[in-house]
Amino acid sequence: MPRVLFTISYGIKPEQRSNYLTLISDMKAHLVNVGKKNYSVFEVKGKKNQFTEIYVFGSEDEYDALDESQDEHTQDLLGKLEACVDDEGMKYSTAIEI
Image 1: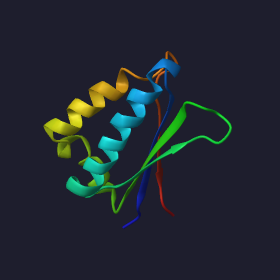
Image 2: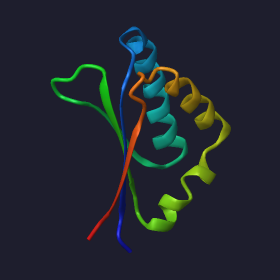
Image 3: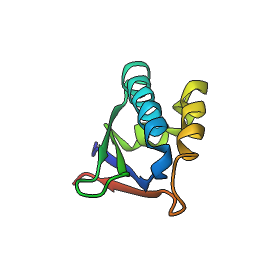
Image 4: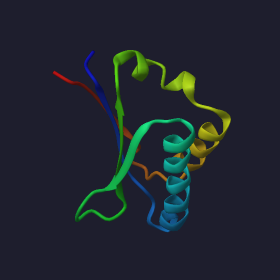
């Protein structure tokens, strides 16, 4: 089965940087340790406050189950993180391995 790469890219409000970094650290720890997700977050080189979250799923079925597998803590963190995002919003991309 081909793997799936799912990315979420966005900028954050500069005044929210400290709060964002705390929240995203909590999110990463929770998704990796509790949710057992292959998940990373990167800041775009040369573009302060521009971030990309990357998930790698073992199959399309695992990717399709992402929303259903979110527990209450994950949903709470997502809501708080979305409040840090700038007016450009989030951009999503999904790629299937060949």
